[in-house]
Amino acid sequence: MVDHELTNAAVAAGRAAGLAAVGVTTDEVLEPARTVLSTRKEAGFGASMAFTYRNPQRSTDPASSLPGCRSIVVGAWDYRRRTPVIDISAPVGRVARYAWVDHYAQLRAALGEIASVLIAAGYRTVIKADDNAIVDRNVAWRAGLGWYGKNANLLVPGLGSWVVLGSVVTDALLVPNTSPVADGCGSCRRCFDGCPTGAIVAPGVIDGRRCLAWLVQGPDPIPIEYREALGDRLYGCDDCQDVCPPAHFNDAEQAEPGSESVIDLVWLLSVGDAEILERLGRWYIANRDPDVIRRTALIVLGNTADPDDSLSIAAIDRYTDVDDPVLSEHARWARRQVEKRRST
Image (cartoon, rainbow, N blue to C red; front, top):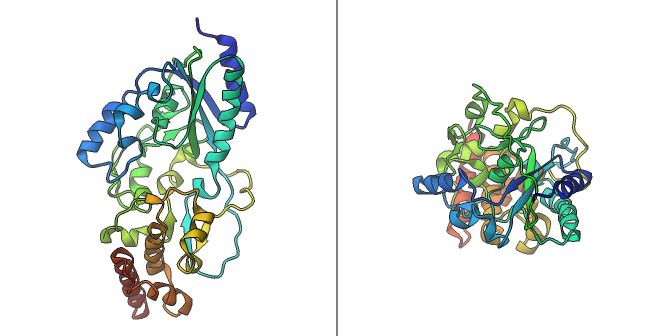
């Protein structure tokens, strides 16, 4: 028999811990995620991503996370924050809102409160958030937290897609959601029109080979045809959320102390690996290689640096003849872009 009282207690614990939405779903294999991941991986839309694309059979089977599981409690952490005022005179690269601070740490702490309730009742739990083990958006959709937007994000009523998602997989038999949230996108296509590279190729379908949010994380050189579109984005891309009506917000909490909405690019291209990882290690960085961030920083400087800014020019020139062929090619491209602006 499902445990109604324990379900209510688990949901209440998540809410009390700050989760903006909490729901419950079953332990069944995640569909349509399994079929979708396999199909899009074959079509090449996954680009060089690992994540849940690496092994769809595993990431769509909750039992892979906890053998004998019976339920999944899903939580959404709201990361809508006001843009902090940061006084940096040097050129900067813009950071996606979810990465200003480690919101996943806050999410995991809140999920831990749910897990504590279930453990106290004698059940096993495992917390999953941003670790490639389970398709977060699919379990959140099944748990009734929101609907799939045309930009492929989960849209939570009243919040839009400004949330990070995570789950508590458990062997407790809880009351699952049976009422999916109705689609709220209708005929709107603003995310299609707002994507700088046309990466949204069909409703809910993203071609990762064009998506800036992936290109700045992945290990490969940034394709030349998308470099100017990158603009000043150092990490992530919020454009499809910024233009989304359900995601629009005027009022939000102040950004947490230490929030970094931009990063000083001259600093980034001047320090060693250890300093970059100490400051930005919360970001996903392919192979934990700081050169991935340096590569993007060079492109951003190429797009934004003042031709008369000697510090920016020196930061670029430092990499034009390095042994790493990716960094040197990106630096030479950046230098050419800056010189084009000098001549116009």
